[in-house]
Length: 200
Image (tube, rainbow, N blue to C red):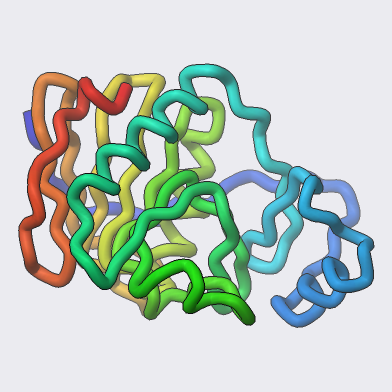
């Protein structure tokens, strides 16, 4: 079953405790100074340091299944990575899986940026609200063409396309159930299909 609808951007609740806004340069300076290390369970989202949720076994398995499935389909000139930083205007999220232009050695001195990304994917259970709101807003505002949420809670794949950057949203939305397949498309080229059930 497919559901197509215009999306409305919603706000996500944030703690009422004191918080400080950071820009990308300040965030990178904190990492360089050792204030934040690679093991810190934090992401910079819209200028705020947000705690990442621990990963349970279904999340870990689906992330690996998604990456393996995509690696079989992506053409030369693209590669698949997982749970690594991407640098956007005011955020540095770490999508569960992503399709990136070039090869990993092209990014020795920086993280991939919006223009380097074709597909970003979040594997979602406890973070479903955040992924549908804040993360969707971040990826749409960056102009990333395709955003998938592998929704473990409802056992479905949510596909967001046609970003409208100025309105911070994707204008096209489809749901694929575990009985359906989804086509991977990169720059209007259909590369093959993935069965949702094989990713869960």
